[in-house]
Image (cartoon, rainbow, N blue to C red):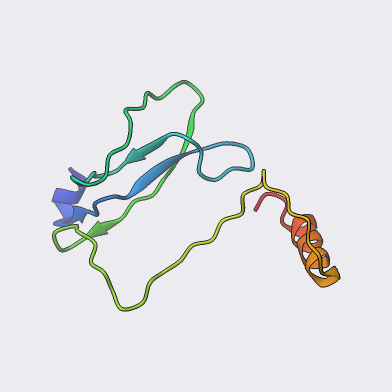
Length: 103
């Protein structure tokens, strides 16, 4: 209803992720507006579930187009641990973990 009032369309494939402590995107995923080639499993919302709702609208058809520059988002896998060889690498990871423990 809101999109119709403003004359916009929801962008296809915009996900909403379940959030947990120290984890930004959990296992449950719900699409704001699905596309034919994107399938996610049916999810039920339980009491006290927390979701990050990503909202993206377009004045066009709501279909993303491939651009010249590819955007990349990196995220840290908290459960993975690595044995680093270089002292500088170990110092960097220690500093990042101490300053940004939840990232």
